[in-house]
Length: 344
Image (cartoon, rainbow, N blue to C red; front, top):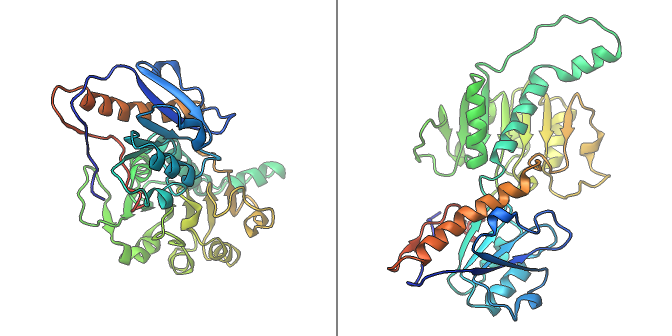
């Protein structure tokens, strides 16, 4: 999408009041002390709590905060110039923000959690490649089983989507000597140390055919619903593994279950789901650890999760503050802008 620059008027900024939409208790509140320099944070979970407060910027912290609440605030308080989504995913906000009829700058938590998610993706690859289920079964049976141990070197890592998470995953894959291929909307975009091969969206089946490990990190948008479905899983090698770390909406879970049951693919490693918490009736629960590993959308919930999120917010604030404090009108060069219309 087109990067959004937000032009500020010439003014000297001192202390800025920032509203934080957050439902307590939440470990994101209060912000770390080092984040608070020059900022007066006020919090609430409803639009009504902010109507009498003068705020220039708004931070939306999940869970429990609806996009309609954020939109209501933006409509009722025209002095809010900037909204930041604490999470990288903005599918819970975008449909409502698309309807805001005035200029607002939007940023998100992109990049804060990419490193931990990339680790998780490689964990999934190593788990199946190093035959961990077989090792665990052997230990339970006191069985000495000297089998050939595969390596990741020269295996193909297929990245569905090539945003910040995928780029971090590619970096780790390269450290293991893997070949990197990717599907991205803009096939012609150039990258420093980019994938070995890039496929357009219409060519995505070729990525699924070639890959030993497919990692989906797509955002949740109207264009990504069931992006990975029966045709894609059918195209994969029977020895291949599917890993999902973006948004659950991008995966047709019934098609994935069919692929696992029929041994069309070897396994799956999932952190995100269409419905969360994953219903107890989901077919996904029926598979053992030799076929499927599930985590509860917590692959990025690290010890420093909240500090990382606030650091990304602060980097955007510094850009905002720098432009606003300039002696001349200048554009804010946002660090992590997003476009509600695109959904990322």
